[in-house]
Amino acid sequence: MTPPAIHRIGTRSVLVDLPDLDTVMAWHATLAATPLPGQVDLIAAARTLLVVTDSTRDARRAAETLRSFTPGAVTGGTARDITIDVVYDGEDLGEVADTLGLAPDTLIDWHTGTTWVGAFGGFAPGFTYCVPDDRSPSRDVPRRESPRTAVPAGAVGLAGGFSAVYPRESPGGWQLIGTTATPMWDADADSPALITPGDRVRYRASREQVEVTRKPSSSRRTTPSRPVLRVDDAGLLTLIEDLGRAGHGDWGVTGSGAADRAAARAVNAAVGNAPDAPVLENIGGLRLTALVDTVVAVTGADAPVTRDGRPVPLAAPTLLTGGSHLTVGTPTTGMRSYVGVRGGFVVDEVLGSASSDVLSGLGPSPVPAGAVLDSSFRPRGTVVTSVANPLRVTSPDGATTHGVLRCVPGPRDDWFDDGWRRLAETTWTVSDRSNRVGLRLEGAALSRSRHGELPSEGMVAGSIQIPPNGTPVIFLRDHAVTGGYPVVATVVAEDLDVAAQLPPGATVTFLPVDPDTLTPLFTPADAADAADAADAADKEEQ
Image (cartoon, rainbow, N blue to C red):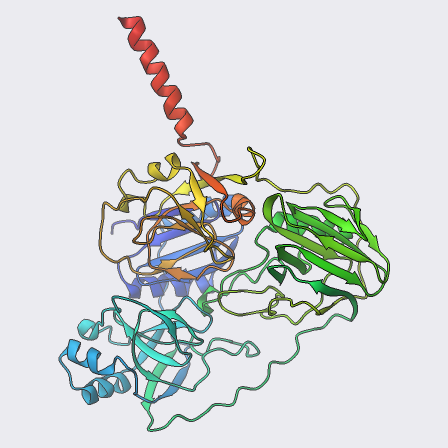
């Protein structure tokens, strides 16, 4: 048997190319039951399996282990039977039936008469790709040529050989054949996603939609707290973030968390909190009023910080007496500022995290002006006055922020002319269409050497996707769990904090490196030096 192709994804993940979905599901079942050392997440897709670990050493060991890995027998002991009532009123129903050479009623009979099996999680919490249990390819449905900008929650769709339900309104390119009122996601349930890998699903035709009552979410606050700060001005965007909710990829849930984790850890250290305590992540400035005496600190972007008009150093614990004001100004270098309060901010949690995920809508809503913020009564650590602000972007010309991002080539660099070298030779500019989901770049487009559609596969924060227009998108903390555009390289986990601090108009260059040693593989400067040396050698020979 030919060994599978193993790709290092950044410094902490491994992607395995497998021949078919059944093999993927067998590998997934075995590795889910018996995780590899350091394994923190496992993302199945149509023909690949992504293993996410928590260190470079664990990723290297995982790659070695998986080269000779043999999955165990797949058992259905934990599979559930799920019935979903559907009104077959989708606007693409007739077109899909014509494409397959069927009458609409025959298509409905096939969809309801098939037992579907949950295969893997998708791009949103509760979106699960389901396949016919007989794996019949006779009903493969092409995606729409132009995706819709908004598919309503509850839409039932077909694409490729899959069926799925959109759990919330989102963009999408699937063919819509019906709607359901069955909730696909309940954050308070033991298994929040209605369908998980291995579950058996039957769709049942219904003449009218029955509204399903969603019970209100129960409070997840378990920490005694008190009001400490009022938000007078929230700037462009202020979110509550901690270090995220890793390990839920099967449910379509990404890790999320603070975009610049080093800054979040540093601000918590300064005020004596645990590293994962919730903090404020701010873009565009912030003004707070203390309701009681408390200690705060600010890290991240190089921005002016004042207490009642007097300057305050970054990363320094600062006493705010009741009624005093803390103001964070517009950054001169960088983009995101982090505010920590002694005791940490206390909000409701989802899947054990207080983080706001702007793509899926999980976690707290953006913090508005007028909001009153709570902190814990019981801080445990001591403030630290020697914390350094960990900002790693610069402003070489005094105006434009610049960052260098180390990246590991692949897994799909062979889809592009010159592979990853064009990526490294170009100075890119950050687009104003960037957000916590992805950093969109502008510059000379990469051209493909291969065409066609890549089956969706697992993604990590740092994946550099190349959409059809040829310009890179770097996935950030709120990225989708899976994606269908080829990834030319992956930013190393250690440099995601740099990416988080690049505002619109900033410039960025990529430095391809070895995943284990971080030794540069190539830089334009290296190429120029080599060319100069070759010219000198030629002259000496002459």
